[in-house]
Picture (cartoon, rainbow, N blue to C red):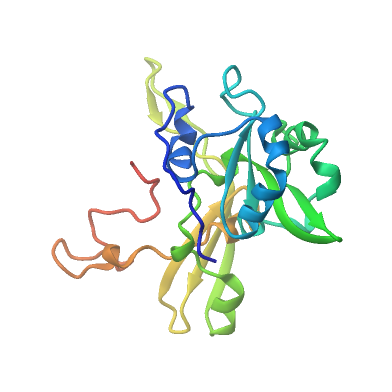
Length: 237
């Protein structure tokens, strides 16, 4: 699905938490609950077309997690079939409660909106959208498997952090999680994704852009990627 971006690109507000700046650059600034209620039908239609609208319980006083949420397309949700469901007509007057249910730590979960019992969009914690791969580089699991590819799933137990005798960090902690690895029929690995659950790992399964597979010096490593580039590292921008 081709993403629909806001008609006007707004500058990133100075008080936007760093983790959300790229989302604001892409989708525009967060709006408040009352504005979202007023524009509810318009925002739902935009999400059905692929757009994301960022929401904040209070855009001037509570700019940090967990008060940021988003009205998002269903393809941004790892496992919509297991999510709580709200009819659109009920969600609108209870939007603050919907946002709390989506963002409350540690039990928040995407809230799926339905029209005539058919899922159409979701309200999610904005943090779930951070570092998602671009749609054009995501591997569509069903299509990939139908074409003969294979996807393997692994659990990575992570690692504890460590410090030296002076208290300096010598090993950064790495959280446990699941890893999905995609391979073509010939066994060549073409993509991977990771997350806190199997569903999230599959949602984040992506194929690195072609420029990371250059055969120009420096020569590719065993992955077929440039030796000076880690395609799975977070975007430094």
